[in-house]
Image (cartoon, rainbow, N blue to C red; front, side, top):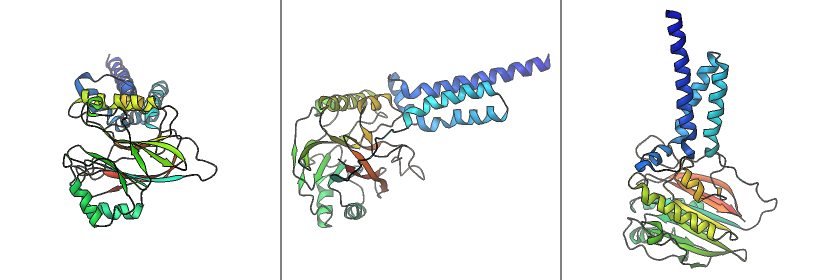
Length: 314
């Protein structure tokens, strides 16, 4: 009787491992909000995969082969959304744009460090999220905005919710359907930039965080989805703070068909201040009809986000 009881306990434990692994595997595919609970958990979907990975190792070591196969399949299913499949780069070097995107955290980021990064990266396009005119004045006095002669509208809110695009190339601000009414929170600037005699669309992105109001977060992603699919023939770049990871089904739907600059695996950018290192990628640079190279992320004091920079090749 005791042996039968132990066997039953082991069998129940293995079933529990499969069930838990299955729930984690399907998590990135769930589109529902569930009162905001699901988006919060989905943000850490890549880290939750450590659970089925540990279960797989355990079942292999204990020679539970059928259970190991089942958990291995579930692990693969959960891993698929976390992998960024990028197209091959161009065989010949064409036009290039250096892009730098940064959430300045209510414009409290260290202007000296930010200016040094801008001077080092020499971006053709600079996207500043949660920025302010005071920060721009500091960057100007430090010589960081030299050559970035074109920009979108001023930032009147003092860093609370403003996104501003700076460019070395001439650009035209356009009405794109990413207004405050469309996004459910604030407008995202969109421009047309001329690159090698072709029009490239650019959106500076800041989506409302799902930690506070998941419905507004969904509205922001829905507006991006509509904008991306309203311009199917245009090369484009989206850069900024999406407050979303690859573990979010709604994020993947919104940017379907775009290439992630971070490459095969996510590039963690947040939170920098709470933990020894950032753990999730919510700051993205994406593009269509473009490949990316030399992508990196740099910490700046005063912000809980890392600055993301890359070279976009057309």
